[in-house]
Length: 271
Length: 244
Image (cartoon, rainbow over all chains, first blue to last red; front, side, top):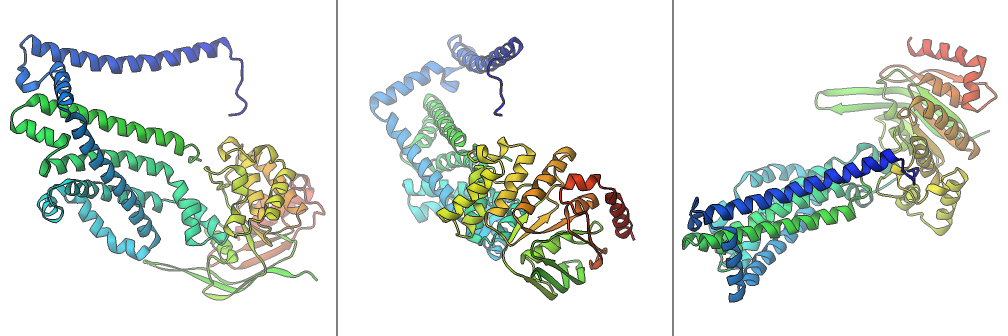
């Protein structure tokens, strides 16, 4: 890549221009679609095509956010859900990664654990709801526990399969240098799976939101999931929609943080 | 009298799978002397890479003995440089693994890299290097830990023809200049002839030594050897022996 020409030909300048135009066009259409949808949503309720009581509307969501803010509960609910999700996410990733390492380390352990992991992965975690309430009570602890439960199996499976796919020839090379298992782990297995680590984080972000909101559905007195359940029960669909929109924004923000991390971490992992 | 760096004595190796067992090699005996460049050729599927694993001590023979004096440096078909490490940190890898990363050894490795034209690439990542340069970096990595014998597992077979001739010459020159002992395993007859002092021809499975030839070119440059009249004579002979 070092022999790139500094002063471009006219054709190249044109090509670059076209390319950036195309990128801008895609961006514009993306935003355009969102605006058109919002506009249609707003208009359809204003013009009486749809009942705002059932489908809410952008302006009503906006004013609901405003009133939540004035009541002082907006950031409280966001904070509760965000904290539960982030703690659950971090714990699921850390624990899952550690367990995956352990299973990579020990062949015996991996073979013994395999059927258990498969079954736990297939089990719908919400079935454990009543048990979780009894074990952890009805507070945030139960929700964090649910979040970990939903995320951890995916983290384990994702990382373990990445660890197991470590290049045979590179393993051979390290062994011929006399490397022990710990060195193979730190010099090869962990650094070569950085890309898999990031893609695992992306999946885990989604999983932890599922876990925390599911947890709040079962037990909670605060949080965005609580607002959704409560709004549904008292038929305040504005509240349901508002909480859903806030969730979308938070999940997107978290995802982009992971993408940012990817840019920093995964520069040179491909051969 | 030169010492033997590597001795195979009546080596037998059995491979076990669920379906049964395969005798990869039986009654295999040969030696590699200090400073010698030995090439082993054999029909495909005769377990050539298994031989290198035995030589490196990664596998133990089922019967017989493998005696090695000193340490090994392994070079594989692909350079296997770690993409997330700079060239310099790749070259220092065997020292790191062997816990020999002293300032003196580090300096020696750097000097070796500079001597063989990698100076400007030390801070680069492997993806920024050409195929030939990468293989050269892989060789310097192998040499950095000052191994007593180099084990070369078809180290050129992944390169395109032109690069391959150049890299072969390059690697041969470096190995000769550093006075290294080398054991090359290949299925490429002309590569064996252009590089080795001695060629060992193996039989099919179970592999044992069929013939041993000392090459008397009086010339170690692989390209010049290829131009030599003797080259095609050797080629014909080895070709016949391989297909016997």
